[in-house]
Image (cartoon, rainbow, N blue to C red; front, top):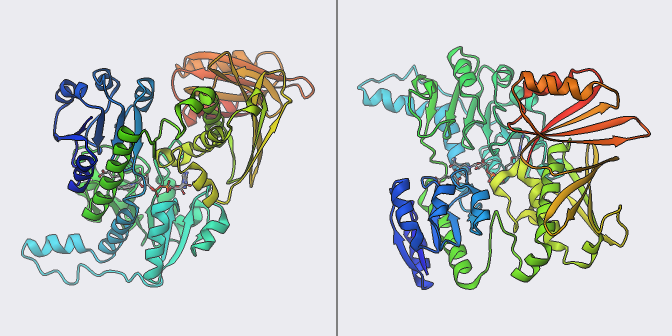
Length: 527
Ligand SMILES: NC(=O)c1ccc[n+]([C@@H]2O[C@H](COP(=O)([O-])OP(=O)(O)OC[C@H]3O[C@@H](n4cnc5c(N)ncnc54)[C@H](O)[C@@H]3O)[C@@H](O)[C@H]2O)c1
Ligand SMILES: O=C(O)CC[C@@H](O)C(=O)O
């Protein structure tokens, strides 16, 4: 079997594949047409961030069984297209966490002692001792946005420098943060109290432009920002204004809204109090060896033994089990994803009830798929079918599974209650026919909906005129409605309206919908 490595991979990874008996070709720097011309000859493809695995490329990949990403990010892979072609996509999410945390700490030190600016000054023949007065880190406050794998390593290193550590992560239980000596606070408090702020969240609907004009306004004038996570979390235009006006003292970025990044697409590069690296977070020989070893072993194991590890689009179960529970895995993942988007507050408990025919099946892969779906909106590609239960355990989330013969008028039914520190929601789903997952209840509202793509969920009084007003508001914003389902609760005279839309609902449109008469709440979802 043949494997194509189309981006730079540490030699140790190439050696592992060869020793396993695979035929390996390393062809880096190929253009899309060049990869397309050769991909038909390979069962495996190993990439980093440069190769774009598009639906078009996959069309020509007639023998391809697996795409392996040496690293975490999968923005360059069309995962739905790969799933449709039966191609497994796997990544190596653990190998570069320490290295990336170390870059964040290096950025903090470089910022606080003006190392890049002083280097440039000396190299231009100057000796500007007075200009580069710095700050000591000891005793200062290090604020972490997103206290996951990398954020917690960065906090640990900052503690070693005798700094106080605080964090904002609404999805992390307080006890877990306390165990690593970090105080959980709100975002505004973090901005106001921190001397250095380091960002370690994935780019999601929730985190896009999380660091905005309001955030920078809440920071200390001496405060400094470091972002080695993902471009787009920081609003670069707002950061430019905050640095230029002296609202904050300095910033360091490793990741950008547009990469590769130049002065033309990122004016921040022209500012003296801004320092930068070209997405070097994972670029150490140690981290590259870690991810190369991990992905080479995973790809070889799959191609030669059929063992699936760290796959983001296929659960780790045998073909026979998959044939039985496949549609319920899709249902479970869909319910999990929707639950997290609806949830307010940190998740504490998940109660899954498997009803009817479903009670007789192997339910554990469905629970795992539910957990993967649950973490997807907040962890993106860092969660997979293998680590989802471990993430739940590490976050202290209690999982309760039960089986019952009873259902609400369906042959099979999965009912899941998610309890958070701010309330709870129940979603009930079923599979119609052989493979048609449906949401049939949301709390007390009965309905029959296929949650998929961009959606708008509206809670309203059951009175005439609401649907008309809603349609007009969406029409004014040129948002097309592709599907609509209404769920009614007769006793309370309340409805929910579930709309499928052709594009994502912006926060401005959401506010206008919420302000309409007889609408008590509205939420934008994307599955
Ligand atoms: N610069 C690089 O080269 C480089 C290298 C590796 C990873 N990364 C990126 O670093 C980021 C962090 O990686 P990780 O492995 O620590 O991920 P992780 O999944 O372990 O942790 C992410 C944390 O962010 C939290 N979070 C999610 N939404 C949030 C929100 N709205 N507000 C606050 N916290 C929120 C999650 O609860 C989680 O604890 C990812 O985006 C990853 O892709 C960058
Ligand atoms: O340099 C890389 O491979 C990207 C590193 C990082 O952003 C990742 O997604 O793992």
